[in-house]
Length: 130
Image (cartoon, rainbow, N blue to C red):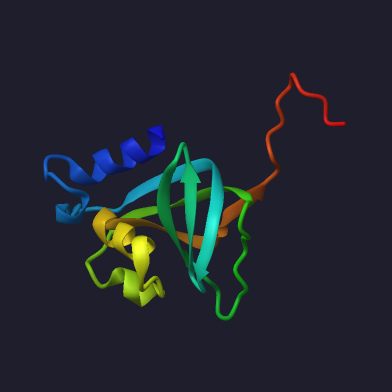
């Protein structure tokens, strides 16, 4: 959850809400161990950690397939960017709570396909993998 608070702090920096923020420069970020919650669009997915959700928009190379699947853990390097109210629809997230959340957050993470890395599940050292 800490990563989400930091991301929102970068965007709001005195503006009150993420949607009201218009940063003058992109905010590069590196996030580790996100869980792919769902892949509802051809060029984006919801990632979670600590119960918070973030939209990750992929800049895919041509007609490349989505490099992640639901349930996978990923590390991503990208740029946090603001978006307007029409962004959710342009991404193909058009109805329900997902569209409302994406619009309300007013920001998303843009990443190049090569900057998404699926990582192995971390194992609890006190548990045997039997």
